[in-house]
Image 1: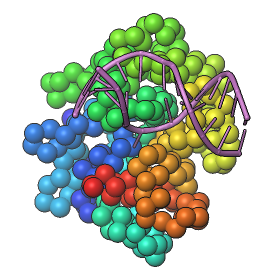
Image 2: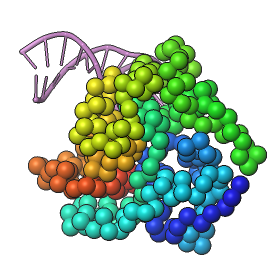
Image 3: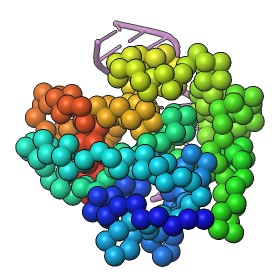
Image 4: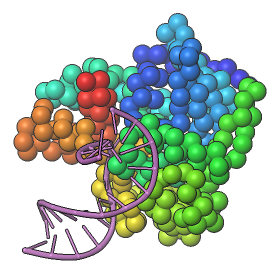
Length: 267
DNA sequence: AAACAGGCCTAAA
DNA sequence: TTTAGGCCTGTT
């Protein structure tokens, strides 16, 4: 196990980043630190004296990429400060980073997210990992990797009954099989244009506009994607002009979406 | 108890 | 192209 200093806590606010609804496997401990698993590596992350530290067995570059540390968020957020209300959201949400999650994990997680609250999404995802993911020891504790789509593709809908995911189980199996058979190739879509990626995702059973945009933003890291859920819809209705077009926010509109989501959830 | 959750699908206009 | 109802499950 190796301890590394990631960056300043100003650059990466772990609470905002982990609690803004983009990920479901990071859990806050009693001491304020977060534990989670990414790309098969368990990790503990905490803030101390103005810096963010991380314990794990993974190579350093993995976390640099995962937390998107090479992009200047201060700079790409500047245009948001010129938009009424969004400026408030931006100031409040500064420190949020869009994680580079595993594409399949994002796809599966956001399929599960539909018509669900975050608490239940997390519990379903945890059961999925516990039942079908590979165990990995870290710091004397057993963690579970996110199961591969190859493994899930071998299962039937009934096998997922233990997840209590309801009608979403069928969508999970369909997605896993599509990836396994290369009918859908998320790595390809990572390099493809946003429009192309969305077109492909929308062909899938159980994936609509909202889930597709979440996968594109959180799994493929196309930051122009702007998922509209009930919270964002409410924000758009209440705080933005009637004909406001999020696409006008540009190549990093997805980051603005996160700031708005975080701010709305603050209440 | 009944309604509602970070949607999507299908059927019907 | 928009709208209504149903869908698993868990919580209030």
